[in-house]
Image (tube, rainbow, N blue to C red; front, side, top):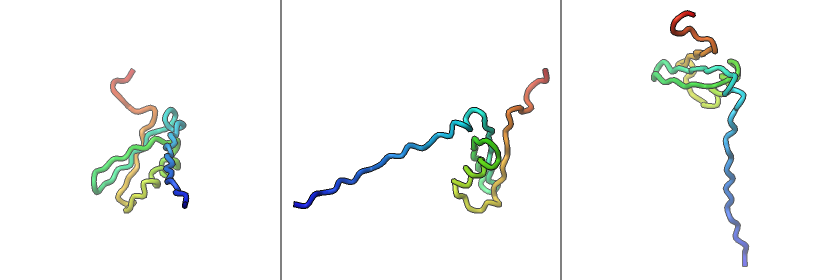
Length: 78
């Protein structure tokens, strides 16, 4: 008798980049053609671009990037 092989499924949990959750900045990538906003937490512009590149979007000329800093102008002056 031949032995049957069972298909094994390996589940890979995504790694959460905890370094960017607490001390990083928020980068917003805005698609000028379709009015789509994508928010990415990253430590620095280079890391933000690496994460954006993982999305593999075409027509990069349709995208602009904006940054939210820790000290935003807001409300009343104290």
